[in-house]
Amino acid sequence: MTGEATIHISSAVVSVLPKHRDEVLQALAALPEVEIHQRDDRKIVIVMEAAESGILGGRLAEIACWQGVLSANMVFEQVERSADIGD
Image (cartoon, rainbow, N blue to C red; front, side):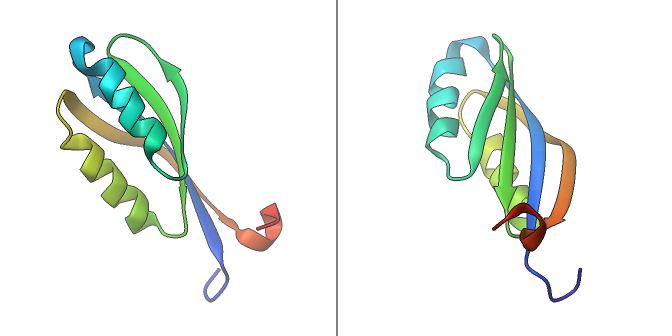
């Protein structure tokens, strides 16, 4: 895939303190290329897209530092050629 435009798609689990859940959900919803797919009192499952893996890692590191977040861990990452998915 060298030299070709790619898209990195990743899922992650964000663990939160229940009293901060709603504010974390709002902050996640405001991030570009982030979708919330599941939530309960303590865990939020998100899917992120970016042009590079480092962007995804940086985004997770940022989320992990938010008030009320206990951890933000990548679960899965897939790399696709942009041409294959129509971007």
